[in-house]
Image (cartoon, rainbow, N blue to C red):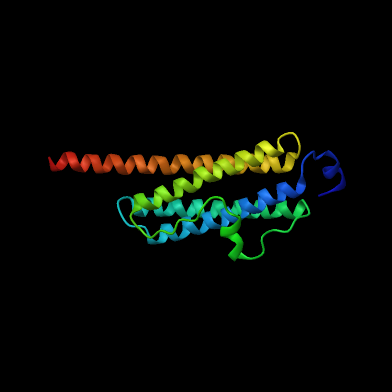
Length: 170
């Protein structure tokens, strides 16, 4: 962190680096969860949703890039070993053992809700103290909120489709 940035930051930088490393681990796990889930997913609307899940995966990778850059700017060391991702992450990785689209979407929804909480915490911790990290956290938080909304909409659409099919069978 630059001298002036250190001077104006009014927080425990080591604690922030720890929070960011936890977020970094979660972003990598989210990336893989989206990516592999999109590849193995089966069920209604799979073709349309697969493309969007891959976009979400790319956005999670972009978040990881932002977070790692900020860790380095703060004078920290990002997690260097992928084996540590599950140790650092509070948001769990859920393997897509059930490949049905709704199961995949529920797993990703859980991950987004956890990420929203993570970035709310980082934003609250840095608000008025570390403007760069705060802005980054808010930008990522907005993406995570949008992802949550997308997933909730897909789940609603699938449920309506299933309801329409039930009505046709009657």
